[in-house]
Image 1 (cartoon, rainbow, N blue to C red):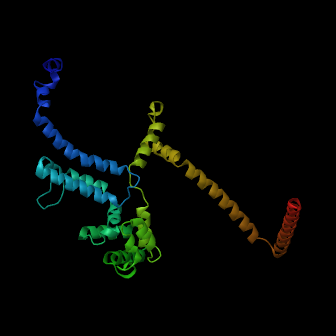
Image 2 (image 1 turned 180 degrees about the vertical axis):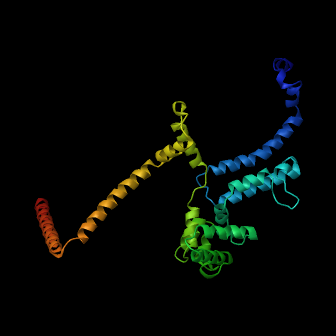
Image 3 (image 1 turned 30 degrees about the vertical axis):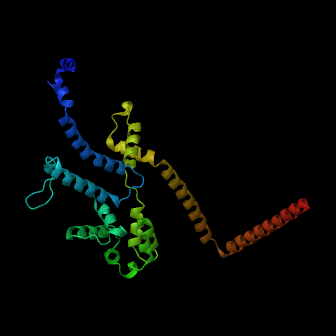
Amino acid sequence: MFHHEAENPEFGEGIYHYMSSFKFWAELENLRELLKPLNESLKMSESHHMNLSMIVTRWDSIHTHLERMITTELPELGEFLCRDPQGINDGPFALRYKHQVKPIHIIAFYLIPTNHQVSLDPGTTTTVYTFFDWYSDSPEVAKVMRTEFLHFRRQTEEFGSGNYCWEHADDVHDFWLMQTEHTQLLAAVAVRLFSTPANSAPSEQAFSVQNLLQDKKRDRLHPERVNKLSYIHMNTRVLRKAKVQAINNKEITEHVQRVLELSKDQEVELEEMLMDAAKESDINDAEEYEDNSEEGD
């Protein structure tokens, strides 16, 4: 052991004695207890079952865990979770929380059926209603969404406590899918939210594509051009399908336009041609049927 210390003076004197001590492993256990839940949360962010409603819950659980660690073994975390004299979070964790948790995550959290009784403070209420304003075509539409949201929270009207939808409260997607027949807007928004994946797979895919495009031979590509190339690479099939659909729609539109521009005589002529074609098709079908019957005999 001392031989290794002599060969590695940068370790400092007695480092191996310290690593062999009970104190070192006890403190290392505290570190493991701190990092393990954080690692589990990172794994959750990579899950294919992750949706927008789980973001707030995940960050709240991390915050609760860190606060518990402050009061037990790691008081140094207090600075990371610090509050100003007015009780407002302004530490690094709060800044990261505001950066990661957006209004769409908050509204998804409050649209979970089992959360319909979770309290709403004035600031969160404003966030929810502002979200409705942003994603509404008109003030009237936003008003309908606010009203349906309140009925959902109070279990009134189409969200009455006796409604069958509450038997599916454990499955948010099925709950709101059932309500699409009974609400004007809110259920459709909720189904879309709970059908949206919220994991790190798209980010990892984007980094993989960028590494593919911007290699050592093309390391001087401008970021804007890299973004455009990445978009084309990741959406090639969608763009190709959209192009084919646009061409088909154009051809259909041109055919319809030509039919609308026909004169009365041309319309009669076209009708006779279609009737003759239909008769010929019927005759061919009858002959084919007779041939098949004879072969069967």
